[in-house]
Length: 476
Image (cartoon, rainbow, N blue to C red):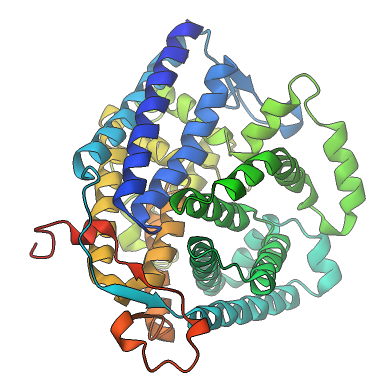
């Protein structure tokens, strides 16, 4: 049985690697499609690979999980069906990429575009200032620094939502959108430095410092993880092999830090005690596998396998209700008390009843819970949407350089969390960019740059995405 799973995995990894390389050659920039593929690789295929090679996985008892959703034993026949559903969905996703993304061809000389690093720094500083203001307000709402540091990162958000209602939910959504915008701008800035072999270490260090502060303030490591994925994608996209190898060599340390943060963030005021607890409760039998599953949010894949077995039998299908939240999220709960909660909250209600939490189960988990076996086509559909969106942004050229980078970040999130929540985040990010007018002057054509007083603040010319120069696309 194990060799059967490994055979499926090898076919999947080979196919995914082939189409991912095809995406890299077709685009010369970070796009929503590349973000979607990077998210699938990290949040879906990586834990699935660990699960397959390990023959299954069981989370430690220290997590106090209700039921057995945190355990998957691939030697049991009951998990063969879920594994095949996952495999088919990912293979169909690869097929869509292979069909849509053209093979690399000779690129025509398109119009050059220049990115103003000074303007991009301004965008980063504006979003940083908004984040600092948000942190000050958050500390004030929690009663001061001491109270904030001892509060649980997740429970304090729930407490604020219960205390202030919809106003706090809206405020929290705006804060998330600003943080996404900061992360997207930071990824774009870092990518430009990697592309042109001109890294601004002082400003880049400032970016990383604020990412670390953001992780401390929010308790969530997803922003810095997304930035690192963007950093890796940029190194791979622009051929920075030495840096890529160095990061991969340091990856065990990164995994250890991210894993330990899961314990430290529960009470930042007692870091030494939290680290002691982390060491005491570490999985001594297979620590490497446990930490990798924690860092890649492998619980989403184990939960997914149980959902595939449970929905349609133990639980009724949702028939698209959680996707409809994209059109009903603005309705107050008081006016529509029976409105379906977001899928992450619903999953926690089903598998951890009575606990105040939310669960990720990959986009396939939400798709299967809504549509059953036909949910396997949702990932390919998302892939088509990511490709179409990437193509439109590429054709827009310099008009939406920042939105393209932000969309890259959001589509990484599409691979780990619910559709409606990410859709709202993407719409909010586009609105914030438009309201602040921060894309104006960010990217200009080479012919318009000759009057620039200081050319060192503008990167060297880069060509528009290759997909935008494929014959016939301009007229579509």
